[in-house]
Length: 240
Image (cartoon, rainbow, N blue to C red; front, side, top):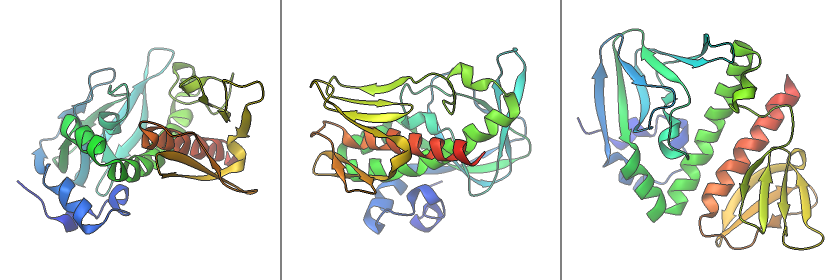
């Protein structure tokens, strides 16, 4: 069943898209109904679909370090499931099963990723919204599994790790470093970055003392989404 733009724009990840951009996504979306007990995602499996819940509930679980499953979240109307379909390495990080008959807007991962490739503006806006969802869900995972961060589901604490690196620019779990190929890279702690946008092929980091632009990148919206996710995680950890 095809959907209208109004149904699609009920979801916050599409809130900043124009009417035309929303129509583009609506053309590759469909509505499906799932019986109770349907497994929608499997932890570690290839991520093929993004689900936007209209009705029903799905329980989301992850495997904790002790081997037991921990409840991460319950997804209901107005929420999304399966964000791994649009974020590398395109494998689900949790198992989700419907606990009652459910209905969702379904977007297949490959055509959605192709759309992001052809329209970086759409890709950035959607991935930015998904970053908020990731941050909230990881926070719940911390509560559910305690040391789940050891599986690299979240990097609120612990040793600094590299998330993205092209030789000139690096994103770690603590900072953005620009000019890694020089003797004095510009180091921006995540705590000082209050927003991130994309402009003219560059990632623009908004900090109190003035914006900082990255070098021109081939896919700046990908890095921008990652930075946005990391600064959200940093602030969530600070509030806890």
